[in-house]
Image 1 (cartoon, rainbow, N blue to C red):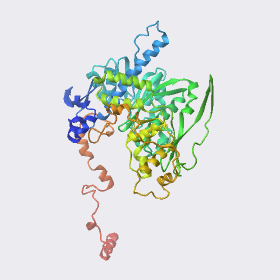
Image 2 (cartoon, helix red, strand yellow; image 1 turned 180 degrees about the vertical axis):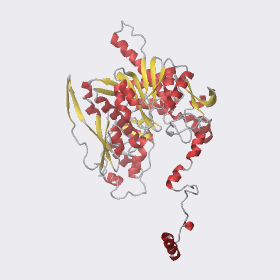
Image 3 (tube, rainbow, N blue to C red; image 1 turned 45 degrees about the vertical axis):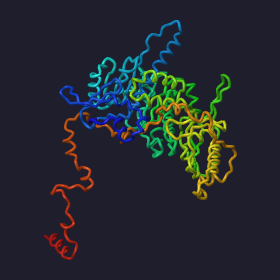
Image 4 (cartoon, one colour; image 1 turned 90 degrees about the vertical axis):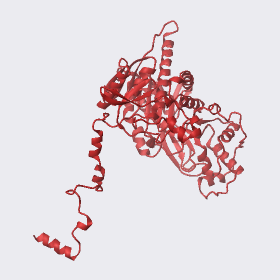
Length: 566
């Protein structure tokens, strides 16, 4: 947290005209040196909070996560508003429900910045328990709580997060927030038990390599789902974590309803409500399913784990029927990869998203990333409730053809009577209810209209696809609804990185105090090289060099013999 240029300064110098596409609210931040209890600290302002860190490079503050924290404040505030309305509805219009207040647990609070912002910016907070396993982190948190005058709302606690949540199973929290460094998997089982009925659970995952298919076996061990490496992996990551939370909740007669699911920067973040109801738990098999992904053209299909058949008041649960595809892909004849189970139901509550748009729009001055928040929320409102998406560049690369612009591709789908939208998780995405057959008919037609000199090798996915004739009529003429409203309004939908190394920071050190850090670094210098035998060692420990070693020749043999005899 040493003094640095703001993101706006950097972008203005490096990106020029790209500045207009970026949220520049971070201008209000200032990292300044202050003194507290005769100790120099670095002050960081975010929202209404000002947190003090030791003047050392070991501080774990990441400005990338301001969007995460801003969105969390907005979601919790709107959740409280909804709970007030629900309580009033339960009591009836003739009874005043009074002021509804919530209890919040931040299980992994670190500096306490998030909890302090909740206390300062959310209306209707009764109590916040800010927990961390590190004693030094809790001491830093306590100082920040006092500095922001929120000690009457925020209580710091030192403890292991999972054990703490198990302790509160009988006196649950209205809101539980999990924002770990890496995977939340060790905390999910206790988290779904620590949140009240109809409460809100917020979960962040930063282990995207695992969720996006680079270690599918690790993903199954952590989340109970096999991840797949594909262009739509970021939405697949959201569906994996939602499936994992649902599975944990089901074990205790509970189920979840997603309010908002976000893929942003280097992490995914989900906001789900947790309900109690064994009857609804039975429907989970129809909400979850396996994913079949073609290893050649990356077409996908889904196999629900079960069926829920409703006729009037009668509800029957039956095994799923399948598989939906054969051993080989029907489009390119390549083998199928199997992943999952994943969440197949909607990722967002569209009514809740619309409420957020209204709320954030009316309080834009309160959020440092309000432009980005509104842009992303508008894209979420436009998203179709269908699983996964195609990437236009990937489709054209399969058949070796130039890429149509997004309006042309969207028009082809709309002209054929299909629905289409973007995904907030990828800029060049096509989320559509059109079957894969039509997607490849669209690519065949486009390639015939724009022939390429680059030949397709025999047996490749593109060659097999082009070998078949199109069954559907495809029209690329501009459709009046091809341009989405979020694009027409020039909203900030996909923010470019505002500065270099815009991503996750290294894990926070155990010690937050500046103390003897330089001395420790000097003492540790070269330790790793010494273990590997590559660093310069003291003379008494240094191995003999080749020129110092006993010769292996005839004279050396005699010297060795003499030495042995003596």
